[in-house]
Amino acid sequence: MTVQEKTNKYIAGTYGRFPVTIVKGKGAAAYDENGKKYIDMGSGIGVNIFGYCDDEWISAVTQQLNTLQHTSNLYYTKPGAELAQVLCEKSGLQKCFFANSGAEANECSIKTARKYSLDKYNDENRNIIVSLKQSFHGRTLATLKATGQDVFHSTFGPFPEGFVYTEADNYDAFVDLCSKNTNICAVIMEMIQGEGGVIALNKIFVKKVYEFCQKHDILVIIDEVQTGNGRTGKMYAYQNYDILPDIVSTAKGVAGGLPMGVCLFGEKTKDTLTPGSHGSTFGMNPVIAAGALNIVNRIDDSLLQDVLKKSDYIKSRLESCKNVISVSGMGLMLGIETTKDSKEIVNECIKNGVLPLTAKNKIRLLPPLNISEDELKTAMDIITEVIDR
Ligand SMILES: *Cc1c(COP(=O)(O)O)cnc(C)c1O
Image (cartoon, rainbow, N blue to C red; front, side):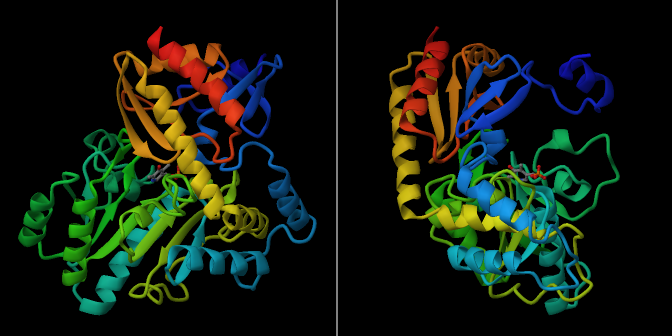
């Protein structure tokens, strides 16, 4: 049996896979079993921030792997402590909790917001979380329910309760919802709705919601699972919005290709979680934390400037395409609306050696942040040619 046959026979069919078997990679280049090269414009869905098998990252990970691969959270370890300090300094928040995925980081956000509210108001009903329509927050039962798309709210019920939904960029609707429901403890938002179509929230909307929430002690949770870690040209996307959230979750890119989720807490929530209130066996794994420390330390101003420069280059290449309707997103998280079917475009790109993603009806680009100018040019030559074909 081939790898593809074996996969289809023995692995649950939760994914519609493209007919490509990736065997290795270096930088932005992935190779299939026949040695065919692809330029990866998706980074494993925004995970491989520095591409495949980055040398510095490998060295940080393997050094730790040869020293201490795991111990329990009953003891102290250095990589997690150092990583936490850097994440707090870069985010402006105060403490963190380490989980293993985006959905788990969001679960932690939800638990923390509710505990903060219960501790402070001693009111069992003040536990409602506002989420935006078209959002995506994960695949666990609670994060599916936190996802503001009806299609995710079937099949697996009963779901945890306590989520209400409001339209993105409609401040009046948000205020109206909050005035009708006095039990709201938090709002959760992605600054750029990724799975929802790479749609950046309006800056005035975000600022007004933030100010309203501060006034009413409603916690602001920002889901930076996809937008975080330099993706938008800032360390975190909320730094483009002039707000300081109460809780931030991130995952995907943070450890450069190893599974990690992080929940960060601000001044209000930094002491909400107490011994026994939350935990994770693999959370803060030292090997993954060492990899993440290497990654986040390298997301500096010069890299972020470079992200913006590459973003401008991609946009300028798309401007001249006759079949492009619009380009959305920020930094190296871009959505391309075209006159064609996005899946067909992706299939054609794959045939020509480029791996883009889709989001709803758009082409979604999440290339590694350090993709070379040459590779980016080659990828854009192919993508623009396929779009306009
Ligand atoms: C991918 C994603 C998640 C879920 O992350 P997992 O690691 O797959 O659990 C949650 N929120 C956003 C915004 C995402 O893009």
